[in-house]
Image (tube, rainbow, N blue to C red; front, side, top):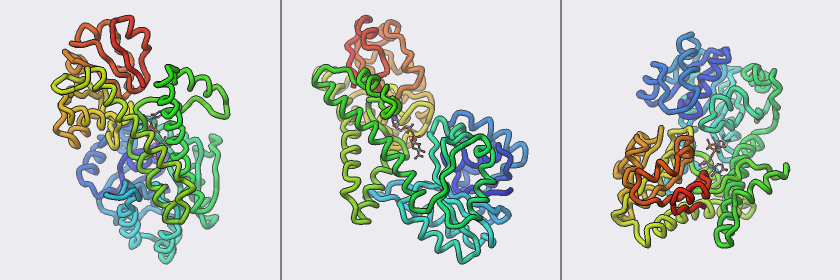
Length: 428
Ligand code: UGA
């Protein structure tokens, strides 16, 4: 089976490589020439654990090729659309221009019997509209949302928790079953449904995850004024299997290219459908989340006696989460930029995210060395819990800094150990 993957970003590049790893012939297509040149040289254009290895094997085997010419999709019978759906500038809605452009560009190259498979996260109703464009060519459309997490994208693609097919005919099911044969044989649950349900499953899952994080962060706000410990609270409620401990990590909140824009786009779409009140709580989820960033900034001002002006602040982390170089809507980078805006001498470090952060915020100082970032700092702010930051020794770190003050924006440290080493510790 030969497939094309249109869009070679965080989602498409992993999908293309993983499908080739599983034995399919794959052509990855993207309009970005520099990205395609890197992929052709088996160099991932972003950091993702495990991707370099499968990309190298698949390109060397000849099963995986890349092109900037959509006409090269012609020999494939299944075409995955994996382009981005960012937030529309000046609006909360999803910007569908890349999805629309990809499908329109593909139309002249489709053959009867081909299957176009949407993977991008889209507002409910999009698949129905795109099907009307695809079907006159004799091809059909399926919506097959993706649930991969950055940092675990290869594993999540090869061994997904579940497969969701939004389809209109049995042919689409047969084709997708062939594509996902390995996962299905391993017992992966498969839900076959209509377009609207498939589209909604994706946004509902992300809305639920965002709600879970904001729920625990709301509890953190109450814990802060009552002296309660939100981490113990999360442990205690998390033992209830109906609640579960995962995604109850209180801290500076969620960011990235998915959760924040997906809950906003969902709200915007529900409003268009006249059902804004059904998901009005997601606005609160968003507000709670953004308030946590304010809280870190306020704690920094407080820790430095009322002003951060001209004080050196070591910001640990710029990526939106560990094991990723992605800085889209990153709480860490947002905090760094705000502290800089208040006059602090900010130095930010991150194992993988500096290049992307610098492209967006060249005004910040970055240092790849953790020690140099910490040296002579008046305040240390942990905002992305990379293992190397979590593992900092409070005694040794105390010898490098100018002032032993730490803000633990991810509740990653043991407050007692830091206090015992003479630090003023503030957590969320
Ligand atoms: C998220 C979903 O988890 C994936 O299932 C989904 O496929 C993906 O979006 C997508 O729509 O493409 P991702 O954005 O890679 O994946 O990252 P997550 O691991 O979900 O983390 C999101 C944010 O929540 C991060 O900023 C993380 O630091 C934060 N988070 C996570 C918390 O603040 N607390 C937690 O307990 C967990």
